Amino acid sequence: MTEKRSSRREFLKNVGLGAVAVGGTACGQKTESPGETSAGVAPIVHRSPVRESWKTDVLVVGGGPAGIGAAIGAARQGVDVLLIENHGFFGGVGAWALGMPINQVRPKGKPRSKVHELVIAKLEAYGPQAVVIKDHQMWCNVDYLKAAVADAFDAAGVKYYLHTRAVDAVVEENRITGVVAGTKAGLVLIKAKVVIDCTGDADVADYAGAETLKEVGKLSPMTLLLKVTNVDLAKAKKIKLREVADKARAKYPLIPKSWSFEDNDPSSNSFYINHSCTRDFENFDGSDPASFTKAEVFARRQAVQMTEAMREFGGPDLRSIELIGTSPQICVRESRRVKGVYILTEDDALQGRTFEDAIAWRSGFLDIGYVKFSEMKIHDVPYRAILPEKLDGLLAAGRCISATHDAASAGKSMGNCMATGHAAAVAGSICVKKNIVPREVDVKALREALRAEGVDFTMGGRDQKGLVLIG
Image (cartoon, rainbow, N blue to C red; front, side, top):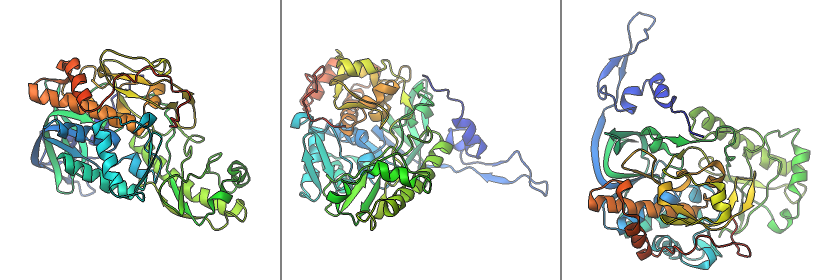
């Protein structure tokens, strides 16, 4: 389903930001509001100017797993790269999720690429208190992860800014040439030869006017993860939390049907809870400001109710449980995706489809967040699926590549997102060096460059049965 692009600029205009946010000629000017005060005098509205301009070869927007792969991948190709991230740390859901594993970084226990391995090496340098690697997964202490990603960026030569959000795109003759970013110093224009959208929500693509996909009404549920302590985990795991939820729901109506404790992260005295959160209540949309706000408030009230429900109805082994943390923001599994030259499908995942223009592959399960869980085969991601159908100068990576609702859930594991970010970065670097746009890239040359970075293109089509590939 193609999303209608009618609301963003109207929304910005309604809140008095239209001219600056959409790059209008009124930037830096003082203009009068169409409304009047009670005294009959129009108020003065100050339009914040773009304070300065930055330039880079490759601009990566978003510092989650896809952005990590993209930033390191571009730096390793010898081009100038700048990454901007809205939060005060890197890692995306890997860092938000309080210990949830970073899946598919070493499928079958084998290195996936030199980019993946650099991040792993920086984590392992901090010792076993930072990371435990099991099968294909990294179980991280998230605060060590935040430091390790910055270490990897510094080692690769990535330039980066935190607390910096893309608020608009600059498009010239159907080619994106940069973004406008909001910083603590004001608005900044960032010019780039190639932009890689790693926002998860296809924000940059949407700002630039590219077509996007979004299945309104059946988006995967969001989750705000909890961290709890003061629990004997062996005893707690024997408690049937679904029965606890059934008893508690009349008093605590926001709690989900059930949840469970997870204990594989390096922490020794606290445990995280990953659950369905919004699944049983409403289909929230992370790319809609009102819906996103409602989801955040709902989830935080739910976390408190879940804890209180366990304390009151979980028996003596949960009576002293304490809530010690929640994710810094609710975790979004699905929202907008770029409409690419090719749209990955559920059948591609189930059949393990391979493509001549493959630039990455995805392993794991087709997992629609406690709604649907299906076995799939390892399948290729074609270059066409990270390339917008019409807009030039832009590549997508991670959660917002071109895919259907089901196919998007087949590839959202973080190791897979890092792989598509890596591929987009190498493609962008080729564009910089040859002064071409992404749709002019020689995919054979791109694949050779990725092979040199440790990417194995023989994985597509493999059956995963019998492998330990959870998530």
